[in-house]
Image (cartoon, rainbow over all chains, first blue to last red; front, side):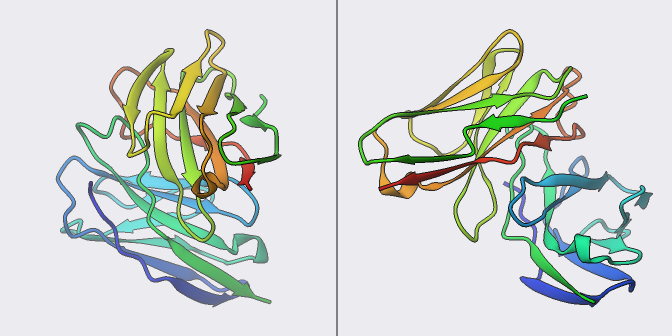
Length: 112
Length: 117
């Protein structure tokens, strides 16, 4: 299964941008990069996904390196509600049949 | 539009017992996945159902079984409970268009917290 590497934890100040890195050096050309987050005492929720180009939505932006071996989730203005565990996940073609392979993620703390 | 719901929210069982967890998918979704999340870990994939058939399974023993019903609700059954089965069990539903499995968004329920004593 395709693997990702993320820092265990990061800290941010409220209303400042946050850049959450993810390394996926074994990514193949057809693997999608997905981000989910899990707020305390809740199930994970979808944040964003992309293949090659940078992506924006109302929650965040996803910057994908040109060689696709790394990506960065960008929260433009962190709020206290953004404190969560953020998971970077590769959606691979073939035998995975669409399941999400979660690592340990990055625990983001947001200070007021 | 209602989201994914799970029942019960909490459950306490003893070793050797059997348990059934339930999930109601988001309206219009045809795929449901189950995950187990131990404390401090990321969720681990148990299995997935697509149009009422098992469509992928993770590294879990056969005593973990499931069903998806025609209305796309789902059950997770665990037999012969062990202490290590204590975890948060998450259900996620999605809508899959044929084989476009790499882009579908999974919507998670709040989970069922199972404690095995």
